Length: 333
Ligand SMILES: *[C@@H]1O[C@H](CO)[C@@H](O)[C@H](O)[C@H]1NC(C)=O
Ligand SMILES: *[C@@H]1O[C@H](CO)[C@@H](O)[C@H](O)[C@H]1NC(C)=O
Image (cartoon, rainbow, N blue to C red):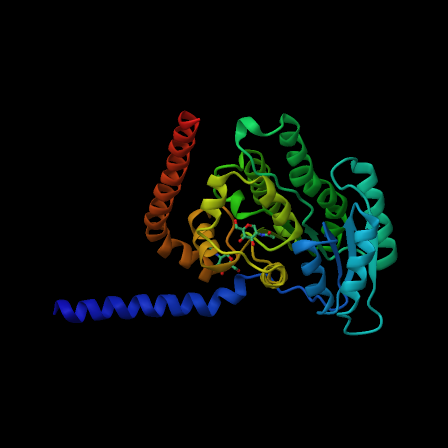
């Protein structure tokens, strides 16, 4: 008898899960059609931003590239244009600092909308990163990072949101980081600015969901970009050893995943097995976009926390080892 009971319970669970899978498309947002859509990409002249622009362009979108350096913008424009799929497509370049003056950002977005129509999707990818020990980081850097990584995402979003609400459609992506899910050695300034995007994204999603606007919070891993090369120069040894525990991704691999998730209206977008685990672990009270996603989070959380404790233990021992080595070499001097 116990065996039959077990079988019945198992059958119920299977049927329940199957049912959830069947109805999950009904509660998920309708995918955005990129063909003919106007996509604005900040930080679009290099790295992940440029790759996202390419990915959208090859699906038929019109692109506005936003960045500071005009020369880099023009080079990126030429590169993106190679991927046209029809001769109506346009790449517009806008040179502005998205973090300094809101009125200026609003004006350039207005001009872009006049030329290419209302913005269907905004990708907030402008950002910078510096890695150093807390007390060795110049104090100015903390402000710089909050300005560019956080305010540089607030301003463009603020400039597009009213039109999106009027049209009752739109997608907004914030590009955070795996360092926006876990605070690691050397990232006191960077992590804080990337964690800030999470609060912004969660609160904003609750406000705009009834207007059929979907927010995506993307968590790139270490990605092979000019920014990483720059960051590499000043990275403390501890940070290097810790980052080596996960791999380096190519910007076009990362961009493909982010664009797919934004099109589908997924709140979370992560890359690779580490990213999958971090997203499940840190989902907290963040919105869920499909029943499948919610189920995965419920089932995996405890297991992932156990694995995470091992990782944390090994990171702590890296930091301790480096400290002891430094002190020993100081004594030797
Ligand atoms: C940065 O350093 C890591 C090792 O710490 C290396 O794997 C990676 O290729 C470097 N990236 C760039 C762009 O220099
Ligand atoms: C986060 O996004 C990734 C990429 O789309 C997906 O594979 C994963 O299931 C999501 N994780 C959670 C916990 O929702």
